[in-house]
Image (cartoon, rainbow, N blue to C red; front, side):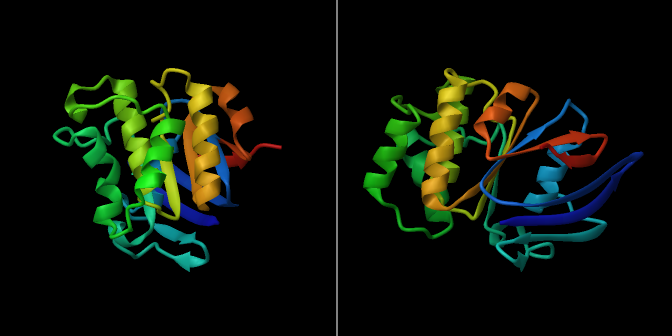
Length: 201
Protein backbone atom coordinates (compact mmCIF):
# COMPACT_ATOMS: atom_id res chain seq x y z
CA UNK A 1 0.00 0.00 0.00
CA UNK A 2 1.25 3.44 -0.92
CA UNK A 3 -0.29 6.55 0.60
CA UNK A 4 0.62 10.10 -0.33
CA UNK A 5 -0.64 13.54 0.54
CA UNK A 6 1.97 15.84 -0.87
CA UNK A 7 2.49 19.37 -2.11
CA UNK A 8 5.54 20.48 -4.05
CA UNK A 9 6.07 23.80 -5.81
CA UNK A 10 8.55 24.12 -8.66
CA UNK A 11 8.52 27.65 -10.06
CA UNK A 12 4.93 28.33 -11.06
CA UNK A 13 4.00 24.63 -11.08
CA UNK A 14 2.24 23.19 -8.02
CA UNK A 15 1.99 19.46 -7.44
CA UNK A 16 -0.85 18.60 -5.06
CA UNK A 17 -1.51 14.87 -4.91
CA UNK A 18 -3.48 12.52 -2.69
CA UNK A 19 -3.32 8.78 -3.36
CA UNK A 20 -3.97 5.68 -1.28
CA UNK A 21 -3.87 2.43 -3.20
CA UNK A 22 -2.04 -0.81 -3.89
CA UNK A 23 -1.47 -3.27 -6.71
CA UNK A 24 -0.69 -2.28 -10.30
CA UNK A 25 -1.50 1.41 -10.69
CA UNK A 26 -1.54 3.44 -13.91
CA UNK A 27 -1.00 7.22 -14.09
CA UNK A 28 -2.25 8.76 -17.31
CA UNK A 29 -1.30 12.28 -18.30
CA UNK A 30 0.33 14.47 -20.91
CA UNK A 31 3.93 15.66 -20.79
CA UNK A 32 4.23 18.36 -18.15
CA UNK A 33 1.20 17.22 -16.17
CA UNK A 34 3.30 16.31 -13.11
CA UNK A 35 3.72 12.53 -13.39
CA UNK A 36 7.52 12.55 -13.23
CA UNK A 37 7.57 15.15 -10.45
CA UNK A 38 5.21 12.98 -8.40
CA UNK A 39 7.36 9.89 -8.88
CA UNK A 40 10.52 11.76 -7.90
CA UNK A 41 8.79 12.94 -4.74
CA UNK A 42 7.71 9.39 -3.83
CA UNK A 43 11.19 8.05 -4.59
CA UNK A 44 12.81 10.72 -2.43
CA UNK A 45 14.62 12.52 -5.24
CA UNK A 46 12.63 15.69 -4.56
CA UNK A 47 11.79 16.83 -1.01
CA UNK A 48 8.14 17.65 -0.35
CA UNK A 49 6.99 21.05 0.85
CA UNK A 50 3.99 19.70 2.77
CA UNK A 51 2.44 16.33 3.57
CA UNK A 52 3.71 12.77 3.71
CA UNK A 53 4.58 9.62 1.79
CA UNK A 54 3.78 6.28 3.43
CA UNK A 55 4.70 2.79 2.24
CA UNK A 56 2.87 -0.09 3.94
CA UNK A 57 1.87 2.27 6.73
CA UNK A 58 5.41 3.52 7.39
CA UNK A 59 6.12 7.19 6.74
CA UNK A 60 9.18 7.43 4.52
CA UNK A 61 9.07 11.17 3.75
CA UNK A 62 12.19 11.92 5.77
CA UNK A 63 14.06 8.72 4.93
CA UNK A 64 17.01 8.68 2.51
CA UNK A 65 16.37 7.18 -0.92
CA UNK A 66 18.10 3.88 -0.17
CA UNK A 67 15.95 3.15 2.91
CA UNK A 68 12.51 3.80 1.44
CA UNK A 69 12.01 0.43 -0.25
CA UNK A 70 11.06 2.34 -3.39
CA UNK A 71 12.76 1.97 -6.79
CA UNK A 72 12.30 4.46 -9.64
CA UNK A 73 12.86 3.17 -13.19
CA UNK A 74 13.17 5.53 -16.16
CA UNK A 75 14.26 4.88 -19.76
CA UNK A 76 17.78 5.87 -18.66
CA UNK A 77 18.03 3.64 -15.59
CA UNK A 78 20.32 0.90 -16.93
CA UNK A 79 23.95 0.77 -15.79
CA UNK A 80 26.06 1.02 -18.98
CA UNK A 81 29.18 -0.98 -18.00
CA UNK A 82 27.40 -4.02 -16.56
CA UNK A 83 26.82 -7.26 -18.48
CA UNK A 84 23.20 -8.42 -18.58
CA UNK A 85 23.43 -11.19 -15.96
CA UNK A 86 25.43 -9.05 -13.53
CA UNK A 87 23.01 -6.18 -14.10
CA UNK A 88 19.99 -8.32 -13.21
CA UNK A 89 21.32 -9.08 -9.73
CA UNK A 90 22.96 -5.70 -9.09
CA UNK A 91 19.94 -4.22 -7.34
CA UNK A 92 19.39 -7.28 -5.16
CA UNK A 93 23.02 -7.30 -4.04
CA UNK A 94 22.97 -3.55 -3.46
CA UNK A 95 19.93 -3.99 -1.19
CA UNK A 96 21.44 -7.14 0.37
CA UNK A 97 18.61 -9.33 -0.90
CA UNK A 98 19.40 -13.02 -1.42
CA UNK A 99 19.79 -13.80 -5.11
CA UNK A 100 17.65 -16.78 -6.13
CA UNK A 101 19.03 -18.01 -9.46
CA UNK A 102 15.82 -19.89 -10.27
CA UNK A 103 13.90 -16.64 -9.79
CA UNK A 104 16.36 -14.80 -12.03
CA UNK A 105 15.86 -17.43 -14.75
CA UNK A 106 12.07 -17.18 -14.43
CA UNK A 107 12.10 -13.39 -14.68
CA UNK A 108 14.38 -13.54 -17.74
CA UNK A 109 12.06 -16.01 -19.43
CA UNK A 110 8.82 -14.18 -18.68
CA UNK A 111 10.20 -10.75 -19.61
CA UNK A 112 11.92 -11.86 -22.81
CA UNK A 113 15.48 -11.17 -21.70
CA UNK A 114 17.23 -13.51 -24.12
CA UNK A 115 20.13 -11.20 -24.96
CA UNK A 116 23.61 -10.75 -23.56
CA UNK A 117 26.39 -8.15 -23.57
CA UNK A 118 26.95 -4.85 -21.84
CA UNK A 119 23.96 -2.62 -21.24
CA UNK A 120 25.65 0.17 -23.20
CA UNK A 121 25.49 -1.95 -26.37
CA UNK A 122 21.77 -2.78 -26.10
CA UNK A 123 18.84 -1.12 -27.85
CA UNK A 124 16.72 1.30 -25.81
CA UNK A 125 13.95 -1.28 -25.49
CA UNK A 126 16.40 -3.92 -24.25
CA UNK A 127 17.84 -1.46 -21.73
CA UNK A 128 14.35 -0.79 -20.42
CA UNK A 129 13.60 -4.51 -20.07
CA UNK A 130 16.87 -4.98 -18.23
CA UNK A 131 16.32 -2.07 -15.82
CA UNK A 132 12.76 -3.15 -15.09
CA UNK A 133 13.79 -6.74 -14.42
CA UNK A 134 16.63 -5.55 -12.18
CA UNK A 135 14.18 -3.50 -10.13
CA UNK A 136 11.84 -6.46 -9.78
CA UNK A 137 14.60 -8.81 -8.62
CA UNK A 138 15.74 -6.33 -5.97
CA UNK A 139 12.40 -6.92 -4.21
CA UNK A 140 11.47 -3.38 -3.13
CA UNK A 141 8.07 -2.60 -1.66
CA UNK A 142 7.19 -0.23 -4.52
CA UNK A 143 8.43 0.12 -8.11
CA UNK A 144 7.81 3.42 -9.90
CA UNK A 145 7.95 3.11 -13.70
CA UNK A 146 8.26 6.54 -15.31
CA UNK A 147 7.55 6.02 -19.02
CA UNK A 148 9.96 3.03 -19.01
CA UNK A 149 7.44 0.77 -20.77
CA UNK A 150 7.34 3.14 -23.73
CA UNK A 151 9.99 1.69 -26.07
CA UNK A 152 9.30 -2.03 -25.63
CA UNK A 153 8.54 -4.52 -28.35
CA UNK A 154 5.25 -6.32 -27.51
CA UNK A 155 4.67 -3.67 -24.88
CA UNK A 156 1.25 -4.89 -23.75
CA UNK A 157 2.49 -8.46 -23.37
CA UNK A 158 5.48 -7.25 -21.35
CA UNK A 159 3.36 -5.06 -19.06
CA UNK A 160 0.97 -7.96 -18.44
CA UNK A 161 3.86 -10.28 -17.53
CA UNK A 162 5.42 -7.60 -15.33
CA UNK A 163 2.15 -7.15 -13.49
CA UNK A 164 1.94 -10.89 -12.82
CA UNK A 165 5.52 -11.08 -11.53
CA UNK A 166 5.08 -8.03 -9.30
CA UNK A 167 1.82 -9.37 -7.89
CA UNK A 168 3.44 -12.73 -7.15
CA UNK A 169 6.22 -10.92 -5.29
CA UNK A 170 3.86 -8.64 -3.36
CA UNK A 171 5.30 -5.49 -4.96
CA UNK A 172 3.12 -2.47 -5.70
CA UNK A 173 3.82 -0.80 -9.05
CA UNK A 174 2.91 2.70 -10.21
CA UNK A 175 3.55 3.30 -13.91
CA UNK A 176 3.08 6.45 -15.95
CA UNK A 177 1.99 6.59 -19.55
CA UNK A 178 0.55 8.93 -22.16
CA UNK A 179 -1.34 6.05 -23.83
CA UNK A 180 -4.82 5.62 -22.36
CA UNK A 181 -4.98 2.07 -23.76
CA UNK A 182 -2.49 1.03 -21.06
CA UNK A 183 -5.18 1.66 -18.44
CA UNK A 184 -6.79 -1.68 -19.28
CA UNK A 185 -3.68 -3.44 -17.94
CA UNK A 186 -3.87 -1.83 -14.48
CA UNK A 187 -5.77 -2.62 -11.29
CA UNK A 188 -6.37 1.08 -10.68
CA UNK A 189 -6.14 4.14 -12.93
CA UNK A 190 -5.45 7.79 -12.11
CA UNK A 191 -5.38 10.84 -14.36
CA UNK A 192 -2.80 13.59 -13.78
CA UNK A 193 -3.49 17.12 -15.02
CA UNK A 194 -1.72 20.33 -13.98
CA UNK A 195 -0.28 18.71 -10.87
CA UNK A 196 -3.56 17.24 -9.61
CA UNK A 197 -4.31 13.51 -9.51
CA UNK A 198 -7.85 12.18 -10.03
CA UNK A 199 -8.88 8.57 -9.56
CA UNK A 200 -10.69 7.21 -12.61
CA UNK A 201 -13.87 5.14 -12.09
